[in-house]
Length: 138
Image (cartoon, rainbow, N blue to C red; front, side, top):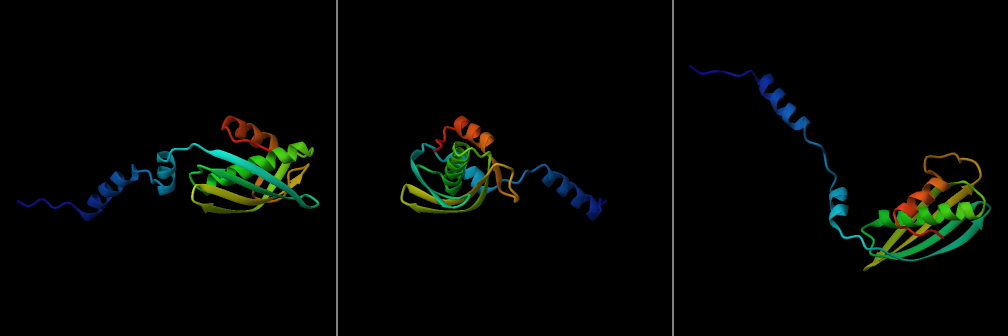
């Protein structure tokens, strides 16, 4: 005698097995495997106009552009605090990699009140986070 399993039961069992799998992103897995021994090479800060500030950062040993973005954000947060402001808003960041040297060119606006936009940062929170993670600020 042949026992037939309805197709919906087979599909349900397969979906139940797959639902336990968590998707992994290749970037996260790769970042964890790369040794992270950064060498922060400095920040050059330029006031462009009004509340618009440009940060040029350089570092060696970055895993990827996210590390360069974090360094620029730390510089922007500290700069805002030094100038008596509590907030900043990210405008843009471009990165470049030449061998082991990474550079970033970031622009932020600084303000006393929480600015409009999606990429806002609370300067005190970010500076504390940078200190916890060993990322230098201005």
